[in-house]
Each structure stands twice: as structure tokens, then as C-alpha cells.
Image 1 (cartoon, rainbow, N blue to C red):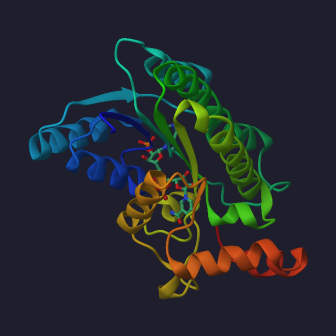
Image 2 (image 1 turned 90 degrees about the horizontal axis):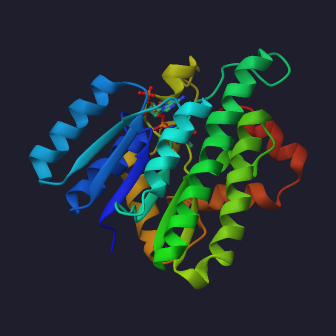
Image 3 (image 1 turned 120 degrees about the vertical axis):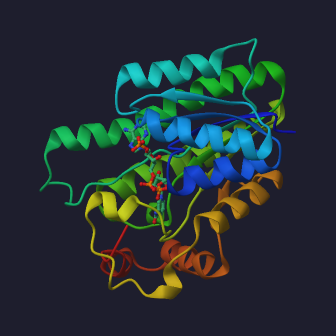
Length: 252
Ligand SMILES: NC(=O)c1ccc[n+]([C@@H]2O[C@H](COP(=O)([O-])OP(=O)(O)OC[C@H]3O[C@@H](n4cnc5c(N)ncnc54)[C@H](OP(=O)(O)O)[C@@H]3O)[C@@H](O)[C@H]2O)c1
């Protein structure tokens, strides 16, 4: 049973949807993001609506200090966290090689280094208690060769598959959640043009979260929400790499 969950990137999109659904089921929350005002507003709303305890941590997860603050909270023995949702993320508008390498460093820290450190802290704490869950929000982009963003998400998928097997004996389930296009603030923040993405390809954040939590209960290492994206992801994993790269070039 999940009594307390820590969700990163909880002020918008998929992270906010995780926070809402978990609060509705009576789970106490620790919400992490950079914008304190939005975090506090969401915390008040969820406390009032669902009567759960909500802590907030303001942290930039592209920084060592931000990562440490959240990892320290996960390591607190007296206040255990049962579920970690490594969700915070963003993308750059340009392709690797054309972008500023300092921006790429920040992306690597946010999309790989932060989840790695938080997973490490969570596994160490959860294995001592014999139970826990970790959801690493990756992307269907992980199954396609498409720049640094896809490579970072592929790292998350690979380590989640391994960790789910490695730590099953101590009661920890690790999942890589791989959504397709989801209506959130993500594309607007990166300044991406999405007019050419057909309507059927867009998912609701609530649909993504519902599928993820159902798959977590089933112990699945990879969750690809909706049948249409399961078919696309399976095709992407088996089709010739050049063909997949050409098709996938359209979006993230
Ligand atoms: N939307 C899609 O189509 C899609 C598809 C596949 C996978 N994903 C993945 O889903 C995850 C969530 O994305 P979303 O679509 O929900 O995006 P979103 O609506 O833009 O939300 C991103 C969240 O991450 C937080 N965040 C961003 N940078 C941060 C930083 N440096 N430190 C701490 N928090 C940070 C943001 O809060 P603050 O700005 O307040 O910090 C916000 O709460 C990401 O990992 C993304 O790669 C998205």
C-alpha cells in the first residue's frame, strides 16, 4: 500500500496528474518542482479536497544542490517514502550538435543524473523496509534513435528493466513509463510546433497516469499507455532503424 509518494515535476502535466490521482486514493504527497508558488497552490488544493498531507520541496533538479535536497528527503528513515515518481523533464528545441553544450549538460542532469540519484536514495531506503515502487517517466521516444532526448529516455528504460528484476526480491517494483504525445505544457515550453501531429496521437495526462499505476500494481517494468502506442512502440523496436528514425523525426 502506498502511504507516501514523492513526485518530481508536480506543478504541471503528467506530474500534476500523478499528484491528483494519488491524493484521491488517500496517498500523502511530497511535491517537487522549481516554482514554489505553483507547488504551494497545488498542495493547498489537494489537502482541501482529499485531506492528505502534502509537503513541497522547491528544487531545480538540473543542479547538484537541488538533487541533494530531494535525495536527502528520500533517505529520511523516520519519514519513509513508498513511491518515487521521477517525472520532471523538459526538452530543447534544437537537435544535439546544433544546441549549446551547456544546455545539453543541464538536460543530461535533469533527465538522467537527477533520476539516477533519486532512484539510488529510494532503493537504499526501500530495500531496508522490504517494499516500494519507483516510476521513471521515460517516453516512447526511448525506442527511436532521435537525438539526446531519446538517448536519455533510453537510459531510463534500460536501467528500469534491470532494476525491476534486480530488486524484485526485496519488494521493489521499478517501472519505465513510456507515453506518446501527451497534452501538457511540455511542447509549448520547448517552443515546438505540434500542429502537424494528428489528433489521435494525443493522450490525456490522466490516461497516462491511470495506465502507469495499473501496470505498477502488476509489476510491469515497462508501461506504454494505450493500445495505439503499444503497437507503435512494438513496431519501432523491430523495424529497420533508418525507417524508424525518419518517421520519428516529427516530434518528441
Ligand atoms: N508531454 C509529452 O508529450 C511527453 C511524452 C513523453 C514523455 N514525457 C515526459 O513526461 C515528463 C513530464 O513532462 P510533461 O509533459 O508533464 O511536461 P510539463 O507539463 O512541461 O511539466 C514538466 C514539469 O517538470 C518540472 N520541471 C521542469 N524542469 C525542472 C527542473 N529543472 N527541476 C525541477 N522540476 C522541473 C516543471 O515544473 P517547474 O517549471 O515549476 O520546475 C513541471 O512541473 C517529462 O519527463 C517528459 O520528458 C512527456
